[in-house]
Image (cartoon, rainbow, N blue to C red; front, top):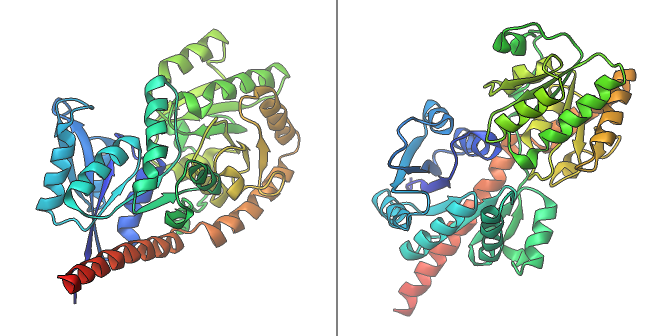
Length: 388
């Protein structure tokens, strides 16, 4: 039997998140007779603690290589990746965000191995991120294969000059059997150390500007001012934590809007939610919506990124425009007045997730992409031998 195709995934993150879950579950589901997966993670020399992403990857049995550098922008990162590729005889490099795309592309070019990127979505909160996003879109045309997580991203890249022949739409998916209702509630209450009366209106995600938490808090204030009884829960951690805490305090919402922090088990979090709200200004294809629908939790979401690939407005959930807390509040109040309607939508959405967003199907599609990349490499080698 030939040796497995050796694939190195590059990541620039401390958190698990949607892309991290995808890599980890790919390792668990891929045919290990045909493919061997390891992960390279960017780390500065000063960073000593193992991150949640590294800990989870190791817990799942994945080989993790720490790519050390003096700082985040040290050019020596490329040399370290080249060394890692050669030492571990990597066949395919798989990158996942602007930094790993840029560094990985250069390293793969030096090593003359194929490189594929999965573009999970673009975040441009500041000038630096905007710059990297612009470069990332321009660089995409030179990759051997570009995977995007929604149809809108495919259209954007084609307008940027990327050949449609190298683009594959591969939606984010979840391991559907991991999401089930067992009747055990109270996970959030136990985690925050106080009782959490229902109904619970929740949002789950990284505390970052593009996630729209300020809109969620504004909407909560409107709903509560109208006399509705509800608890609003924000689950997650990130750079916006202090700003979100300040906003909650300034509006006097400490008793009704709870910042629960990072909670490891999304299934148990969602089992405590009566309604899931995604207020994001930008997304790739959010796993949390797939997870919520599998848990039969009604969803209100902004119509961004790949969300419309999952939910049709007033079919599997309710879609609103980003940056409109007033509309968000009115939609939440409609749910509180009559939760049955959105509940039926969630059951319809669950069937969509089961049929179209199961991780096993995604993995088979990814395997085909890897195989085709290696077939092209092997054909090129045979041609060089024939010519010589």
